[in-house]
Length: 502
Image 1 (cartoon, rainbow, N blue to C red):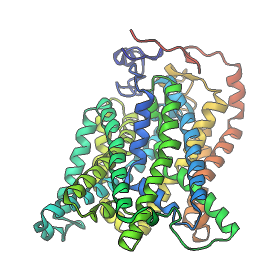
Image 2 (image 1 turned 180 degrees about the vertical axis):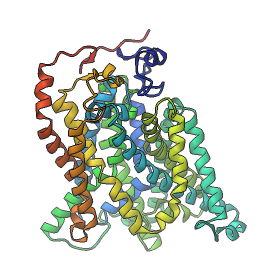
Image 3 (image 1 turned 90 degrees about the vertical axis):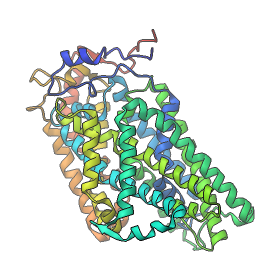
Image 4 (image 1 turned 135 degrees about the vertical axis):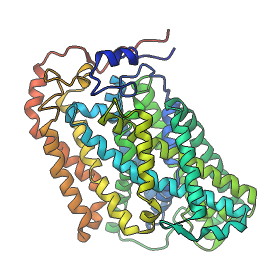
């Protein structure tokens, strides 16, 4: 039997004890805290080993910096992500509840729907985009082996070709099938998806080195020279971009850390899955990208295009299918699980985990992500608007848990919808958290939409998190004093004992 949280018995017991307006089997404290460090490691591998992660890592080597400078930026950025992931993980692992439920501690039992819906809408956009990218990869595989299908690539309906619709539908169904079988199936899938990409990436890097020789590989992928000031700014910017790239999965990391055996297991998984894994992936990436410049006469940062240029058809097919698997992996962990819990939190008795995930899946189609993706300006502003909420939410949640609540959780009160509940505040909403959120988001939006502040926009996550944390800490300072003197009943302590295997 897996380790069990002392706060959770069975889901049925939780449903009997907690308010049905706030609880269902998926939101109740889990009793199956059986994820080891490897499962957390695989989660980050699925997140890192994606087409987006590839492009991000490769792009840093084109900034005109020396290789050691780029690697230093990558290390600094990913270490910040690691620290933040450990901080986010703790309350969910302690209580055994997902991100949406933990938000009740800061925003109120009903106010938590605000951050939940925000994260769900972000998943809408990214889920559709990632599915579209995977569909494009699948289309390349089909056209490689069946060139006669080219006639089906003409835009047909709503801006997408008939073959595009078929490929998008296939990818949509494959992801839904994995998700439909629940968290155990997702865990098994990401345990395979992440490592599989490494095999293909290393094989591709080996093939490129074989073709070009070591002389054709350079860790500095740009010839432009920068001044000392420009180098410093580029390094700071690159560090910030690493954190921003991981900000979405980072915010809802509690959806996965709730299943962790212990915080030590989660920290170990984060350590191997982030600094070590990301740097190794980046080095392999730059070998491939650098080799494309020597081999094909141009720098190719799109992994799908690189794989498609390999001469062997079978190798191309295997490579592209692996990239598809990787995209499915990141889409499920970053953009399927999160809205599943988030939307379920809005109406627990009507929206289950599965229903919440399918809402996001259907919503992603209605957005017609291919049209969104075809307009760089539109997608830029769409994601910037949604991303302007991530930093402030992060700042408020951590400030509330660590500074206001002093690392304590009353699990029973997370599911208490009466004025007697600790997280009832005013009608189930915490006006102080909302008051800190709104101005912080507004400032981030202003930064995103003013062209002259474009360079500052790269730091919007840090700005939003800092502003919201400082504002909330000031507004809620009296609450901290009250918490210091309060006597907690049925709370989860930071060093709570966990039940051992039976």
